[in-house]
Amino acid sequence: MLIIRHAEKPDSGTGLSPAGEARAQAYVGYFQHLMLNGVEFRPDTLIATADSPNSARERLTLTPLSQALGVPIDLRFSNTDLASLVHLLTSEAHGKSVLIAWHHGTLPQIIEALGGDPHALLPDGYWPDNVFDAVVALRYDHDGKFIPGSEQLIHEDFANPPGLIWGANSQ
Image (cartoon, rainbow, N blue to C red; front, side):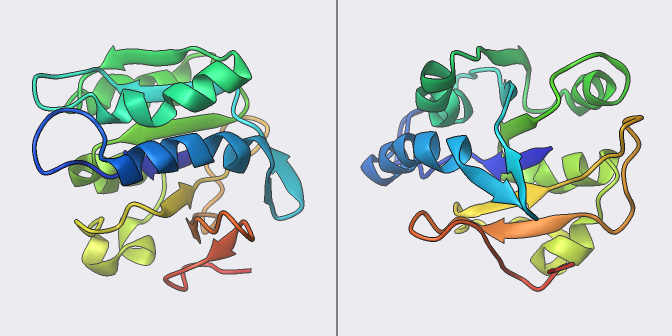
């Protein structure tokens, strides 16, 4: 399972900035060819927060990838509906390779609820306000159980994907 923050936002409005739109487009190639520890990760499930009066950025971040893969974006969860998201991911059938785009303020709680340690991955356990280029990877066994200590923080390097940052559980 991979978790990302939405792409860059403008000073005002609910959409993406030009840099955010460029990142969303770059995700098409990045996530179609991503290798994690020698294993291809190609998302077959895309989840983003439902649009709100304040933001459509999570959906807009995944839209180009969704169109390229032919995989719809699951938009049924509000930014604060973490319990339902975690329930889906821990007890209901879903794809093998999940990519989640969410608001950065609640990402540490999602990481923790899904078995990861946000303090091992993020500075002071919080997703920094100015970081848009990181991916959290959580690994699960064939029975869907989280593999303790498997969480990684990956720096998006569109020229040379992927490279680990912040030193957490690097391999």
